[in-house]
Image (cartoon, rainbow, N blue to C red; front, side, top):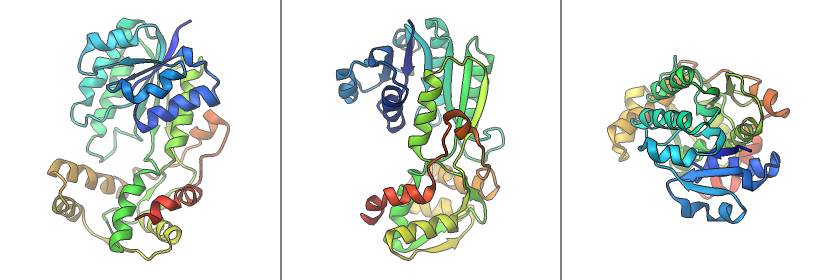
Length: 292
């Protein structure tokens, strides 16, 4: 019997997927392969019976060996912004050579029209899958609620939230929910070529997001609308390299353009349940917010 494989398994999303495979989908640990650059970080999963393998996305031969025996593979997009298209291409080639039948890939919403700086990498990866000999499922994951924690620290420390998103809305979703879907699809027998866009059930402006964060933390935060160049300049002033600052600003530009506002029912279609509401997620993470 071919196994289910999760790449990037030592990351936050990867580890949640492993948990849902075993606890929610009831997949025997012996039927799961987890690949990572840091096998020691998955020692607990190995102890449960998951087969842990080292995978180097920069070497096709290494990946082909790591993917051997897998029938379905979850390709979690790598963190190598600027280089990950090559890495994803290597993974797809290796999967074909190793006899993998189906790949599930974590992409982003509407990459063809997105203003996010790394959207072309996701779009090109989707195209590589479409051109491959494999069957595939593309999960276009909206922004994580968890990304808010990074910004909230600054908002709560300064009492100010600078944004270039205007009145644009964001339909973000909990990482836990995205892991649940990924595990569900990976553990299924569905081999149709399908694209799903996974969003929350609500979309919020930056003002609304900040107000909810402030209310949860019991503080006051002023939202200050600025231009995209101001976001870049502020990020550089805070110590971020120019390319990273441009990337951060592109998120706001994409929200302002309405490219993150779409709400779909794909999550519910795939799982049979509603996505976790943002207000509930905030309540569950209040201690992390208040810590700031």
